[in-house]
Length: 188
Image (cartoon, rainbow, N blue to C red):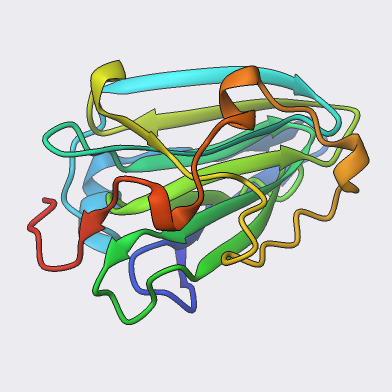
């Protein structure tokens, strides 16, 4: 696998080695050994999958300690813009984000470490989205930031009139009012 660093330390893009011929293709989508050697030593404990239609925006979500989560996300079919936002107060990149297009064709994966909010918007007619988490879902420790907080300046590509949100995501707080991480806290 090829690990591509981003402008913010922590989130990385992972490109698998794809072996193709006239029958189709094969690639190793995950190897614990390779991930620990090239990205971070962590253990994923839960896999999730969602199916969404064009304009659906899920995010910006995270979990607070002691149930903070890293995520390794990918698209099986379709296309999304995937976003990670640094929400570690005191970080030199606090409030900045990384955005990457994930598709069923490019097979890229995006690693979002603890201390980052995560969200995606669907750019294709439909998407099948999968992700691994290194901590279990803990609803009492959920956190979120409003997707269109002006302080974040995220270009979601999809026109605002076409964005589809859950009732819950419509009510997420602005970054200034959200419970956040501290840059000096040990998250792993």
